[in-house]
Length: 541
Image (cartoon, rainbow, N blue to C red; front, side, top):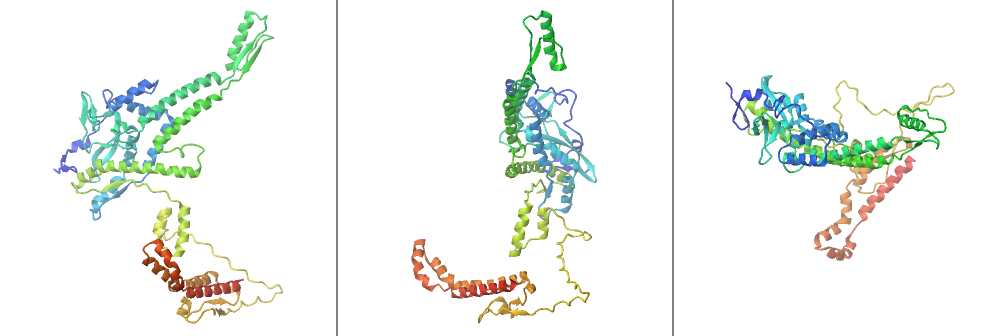
């Protein structure tokens, strides 16, 4: 019988892998039904819940954290935003150079399993609550021992050790300390958004106060609206009204709010007094808006992308902060899977290894496509070499297939041919014009054109000039040997800079080197270039 070994070289029981451990029960410490704690929550009760959680008794705290995602809509939205930002990252596999291809391919197959992607989403629950647990169910499938299912386990099914509050244990009936959990039975994710024990790391702990205050604010606003949201009805009767008339008027005033109709004795009237109910929005609405903004800062690190009235530029700046949080979340989640899943999968199928492939969740930096393409368009003509493969990856375009119709710039339309009006044959096209040689070269000119034996030419007629070609030739000629031409001008200054030991000494040497500076050669080069440029312009115009 083949022995199964874990990454530490110890044998693993196949029964341990195939049986579920943290199954829910109808009764006991892992009961599926638990009483809520959010209803009627008051400061004293909340303080007690948080104190007990800090001591390791986190059942009520975890229940409250779950109820908050059902009752506090803004908090639920922000938690979902942060969790989905992680789930939207495609996992990748990294392996050392020369690593066995069979193992790498098997890890790739595991990482691409949709069940694992669902498990990643379940593990992100630990960001709010402090920890999350997934139980993989191992079975032989396609000739390998692999997790065929990942079961999310309620965090209330577990507890931490009584001393350090750092070791997670499985809650069982009849044992107050619980029992140790064993790998690879569980994948435990304890994200680190702050230092401290896991039960104090989740941002749900800080959000509980905002949840309680917004609950108070909503109740007060509802009571305010109930009283001042409808106008006050005042019935007026004359001095000689009888008791029966007064009762009839009172009934009419009480019923008109719902019935919108009433009859009253003659001589009586009903007056509606409008209440200043709009002030409630300024008081209660301002409180709720403030709490929502604080929750946004707590969960996603900013408020710009979650609130109205933010400019696009502000949102782009603040989105960088959220990107940093997502990168940290993905890195920590990758570390969890590289500890609790990948090494066990490799060891159980291929035996213990010195090193193991790693699963990563790479978060790509958003690219400004417009800025990128404009920069490349400016730099490529200057000689920068840019690979098509890299550019396609940046802008998200794939290599076209052989049978794809590739996009291309539209061809410039040909000028229409002149049509004679007298019915005669159209005139023959003009013969090619001879190009006049530009004779502005001086003796011993060492420009690119003279050295190549091909002088720069100007067209005899403006229509014959190819502007781009002429400018390219002119630019190449003007820049030819520029270092040699500028050396007599710069050499004395360069020598003084290398000789001087201080700026004051260099400043004192400037009058001495002024007579040694020779700019005649460069001046001649510039004069010739200006003459040629003017000649090109005159012919063009």
